[in-house]
Every structure is written in C-alpha cells, then in structure tokens.
Length: 426
Image (cartoon, rainbow, N blue to C red):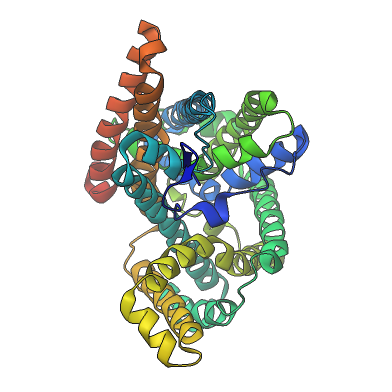
C-alpha cells in the first residue's frame, strides 16, 4: 500500500493480487517471461479481424503505434514511481497508489474502478471466446448457441472452482492456457500458410486502407492486446536490478509487436473478407483444429478463477466492511463463508449474463480497448506524469504528455462510437 509520512493510508483494493514478490529479486529473463504472459492473451486471435476492418497497412501501423505508445506510457508510470520514491516517506506499489498520491481517495477509487472494469471485461471476453469456439466445435443438426455453453457448461464449472480459495493452486492452469494460446497461434499460422496460394496476388487483392472508420476500431483491438498496466509497477519493483526494467520492456514489446503484426497480416491475407472476429473460427473442423479449440477453452476455463480473483477480492472487501454483514456474521456461524460464496456466484452469473448480450468478440474487445484500456494506457499515465514531474520536464516532453492525454480522450470517445456503430461505420 502507499505509505505517506510513516503512516499507512487506506489499503488499496488491488494490493492483494498485484504485490508480486517485491523482495523476490526476479532476473531479467524471469521478468521478460512475466511481461509476455501478462500482455499476450486471447486478444491476439482477434487481430486478423482488426486488419480486415481497417486494411492490412492501417492495421499494421495501428499495432505498431499502439505498441510504441503503450511502451512509452508504461515507462511514464515507472518514472512517476521513481520520482515519488525519492522521498523516503512515500512507497508506491500499485496503480491505485499513484491515483491516491495524485488526487487523494477520489483518484484511488477512479483508478481502481477502471482497473476493476478492465478486469471484468477481460472475464467477459473469456466467456464469449469459450462459448463461440465450443459452438463451432460441436456442430449438430441443431445449432447450439454460444450462450448455451456459457450457462450450462462454463458457469457450473466456475461455480465449483469459485470454492477454491487458494490462488497458487490454480496457477499451473495459467501456464497450460498460455501453452494452448501459443499452440493455437502456431496452428493458425500453419493453416494460414496452407490457405495462401498466390501470396502476392492475395496481397494485391486485399485492402491496404479500408476507410478511415476502420482505423480506430482496429486500434481499439490493438490497445486491448497490449493491456498489462496493472502489473507494470509490481513487475518493475520485483526485479533484482530495477535499472534493467526498461531494457526488458523494450525487448518484450519489440517481440510482441512483430508477432502481432505478422499474425494479423497473415490471418487477413489468408481468409480475406471471410475473416471472423475470432480467427480460430476460420479453422477447418479437423482433429488438429478441434484439439486446439478445446485445449484453449479448457485452459481458459481453469484460468478463469485467476482472472476473477481481483474481482472477488474487491467485492469481498466491500461486503466484509458492511455493518449489516458484520452483524450477521457475529450472530450466525458460517455466515461469512456462505456470504462470500453467494457473492462469488452472483458475480459469475452477472458476468455470464453480460456476455450473453454481447453481439461479437471483435466489437467488444475494440470497445474495451478504446475506452477503459485507453484511459489506463494513455490518459492516466500522462496525467500522473504531468502531475508529479511537470515542473522538471522540458517543453517537448510536456507537449508530448499533453498530446497523449488529449488523443487518449479523443480516441476513447471516437473509438467507442465506431465500436458501437461498427456495422454502419466500419
């Protein structure tokens, strides 16, 4: 938590899950792996659709721009933390701590509410992804809707997993999900290379720029794919040699950006106008593709509680602070255990219900990337940087911060409109 003048301020909602062994002394290689795992997720499978919406050239430039911009703003957060660390009376451990130092409790809650929403949208994206992929695998004479799999397959499993309170006992499933994600990318690339006959002709036929309306839509997906701001400060503070953090981050972003551009470009060139918002849905229903889809769904289903963990923590912290709940727990044995698990199940049902109303994976992650992720990635870091280091910055850095802040706000508004009215504007 943030410590000011020797006293502890109100504990941040995010402290329990973002404090990653600040005393652990992670190596450069370990931190590089953590950064890769933190950033790369299911969003990468929506990149070919983003390239379809904007054109391959605009999509490539959008991914590169998003990568450079998020790399820069992540370093802004670290600069803010280091500046505040110069005063021995202040210790920064989370994104919410920066919000508190900048704007008090209002700043903390604004920041952490945005992180909460970002985490919730990630959970909903998981549900949409699992539902659509399972629906594409189990093809019968009667089409089974994705929502059926969400409510009758995924939700009961997550109810059971919600009773597991140990965070570390679920960690191996995260590794399994990352392996499945990497395998899916490899299988998709293999299939794409097999589909592409006459590469130069297909590139010539593909749109390089498919109208200006598609650019913010694709940029929203790209920003979503680079999201990892909640872990920036904990990962930097966990390094044995924190001076190497910028080098680690630059290597990670260079590699991720190259993979994203290559994957999005090939996916769009391979499937053209038939590219779906989750590119695995373009795969044929052969055994290798089905194995990848099911493996991804199983891995994500067991990773789901890990993604839900901060949401559980935030909600439970609020519940346990309520006077009426404290009184019930004092009067009834086991009331706290029952209340916590009922709350968890209600949260799961609310996530599933929200996912059932989302029209498409691509539109949803673009909307998330262009609103919540844009605020966390561009607006807040630039605002904090100006707040804490403004007087010591030279003119061009001040101007750059203001440009990032202003463009982040404009992007959040404009990108949201494009995502909402995508059918008519993209």
